[in-house]
Image (cartoon, rainbow, N blue to C red; front, side):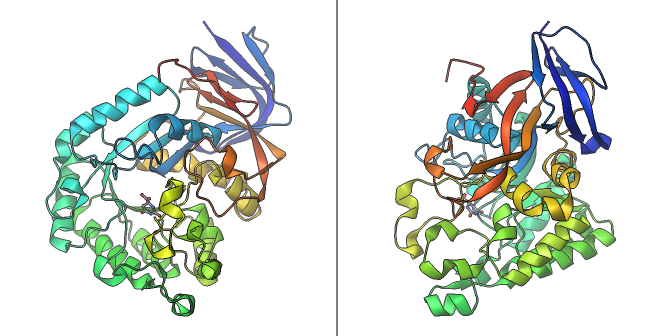
Length: 433
Ligand code: DOR
């Protein structure tokens, strides 16, 4: 019997509408009790009086690159980065090499995750074979192997007929689709947002309508099929409006936003810094404001990192040849805490990082309810951290946030009742990696 007692922290569990100072007892990997004064004996007692205690975060959008791109990230380095960022569960995007369109790849990922033994990894399988947008993947087999959702992330499914059939099939499989909304013919190789800035810089622009037209199409398909559709990394004001209207109709639509789309805009590309090169591209300040309002009003359900680690040689090239993406899992929590706690309040922010993604993807996580797995984030809300990507656990050092001083220090992360992160260090559960 292993027991861990956290004394006197501010416990925030949006799933149970809890926000109070209390003690929390963990026993045999599970949350045993939350109460005012627990006087149980424990193997370890932690003074948490100045801390906030909440469920371990769930990141609904993560690229860990294995198999195939181990120079960018591996399951080990990515899991460590997740834990260091407070993330104890994550959705694993399928644009690996080969892409996750075969149950054997899901088995491989699950094996690796067991060996590493840190964050829970929930594989997302490809919607179409090879994520090429033509032929549907074997969805039932992939779901049976453990896929929690389906997506061709990184690419849009341009062919409407293929998307319709995919949604019809997914309705039978009863899994959601994750949409990377970006019409290929309209985006047409765009390197950044189509705007006065793209003209000034002489870079090909990807227009906002490339995203919006697909959001519109897939809302129509959700209405037709009843399949759950989750829009990833939305970036424009009109996308928020379209989703708001669809939600009024009670269609099974959900969506997420990234910290970078909330915080950055296309003016920041002025110096051709490829750390700002992402897909969908950074838009403008009006879009940023609309995304924040959407987040506050509940149109946007989740915050996700779209953690997209790349090797130096993928980013330190001419802008046109640089890879899209930001290595974001280690900064997601501190960024939103720093810039949006005032707007949303702590409980709402945590809700969008825990129970909301858990509900959308049917995950057994995201709450501190008694009897549930003790996946716990302990942070000091008064602490400060400085972003220094040279110290990342992730192999991907590509971030535009280097040097920023951010609020909140992650003091401890507990996974299944075991301390896996403390004093800035990972405490591996298993030696075999
Ligand atoms: O910026 C991005 N990078 N957006 C995506 O959709 C894919 C991702 C990647 O895999 O690098």
